Length: 348
Image (tube, rainbow, N blue to C red; front, side, top):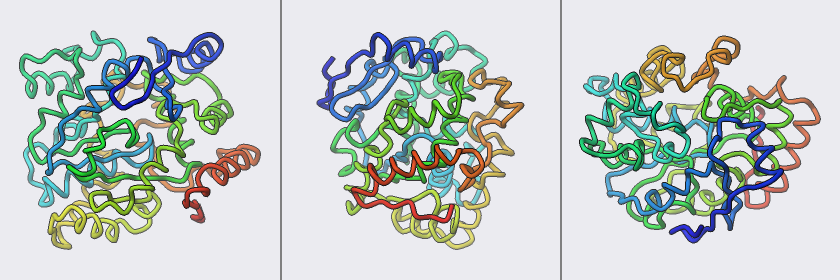
């Protein structure tokens, strides 16, 4: 199948598909790999690919773009709060983050539409209010991205090449990259936690899938490379998760200049506290409801290893990756990422 982006989506078959669905039984509708690039997605991506590519952006839009588990949710909340709630008095601040700042490409991951449109799902209630008369089968999150009021803050895990080339010339993009070792640990937990992934393998399997570019949204190195090559564009702000963690106020001041939000130091302090890991965890900012009740989460993983807001730290890979796995990721990083100018030289 040919896509508007110029890519071709090819369905996985045979042993490759069997292994993917064995380790990720949440992908119930097949898998595709795109060429060029080798991007991996659940097959429902094909239903939304052209709609996402042709999405109409506005000059007031801000896109938060990352590979999964690079600090997207934190950055979303920082940006939305800077632009909408610096005095912590916005009436929508208690609404779930996904309702205020939609995850544009999430529809391909939502699975059974009957579960998505259940009246117990608070996101569906927001959809009905924001998109009256619209069919959720055409993309619940995609249509929410269109319908939310200006200024829109939208999240995507898709790389630049799968978005319309006009995105960066029209709107602003904040791209967040993270140490691959921490990405692996966080994405591994996320893939076990979220039922639409439902990862059933071992960490060893997950590391191999990562370095072989076989995880959904992979290849990570190419995802980062596409953004890194555009880092000098005036509408792109490229930031490392580790820098945000090390000096959040310093990075917020850079964002303040990039977004032209003209916030005072007192307002930036408000933003930093309100969007801190512990505050977001306390108010369940991701869903707005208890994790188990949302139906998206594996309750056993929540009980044993934590929920969506687990640690939010740099260096969590230490003590989790074996020396052999660490060496494998180091070799991959040197081969794939150092070649285009990124060295993850942080002490973590």
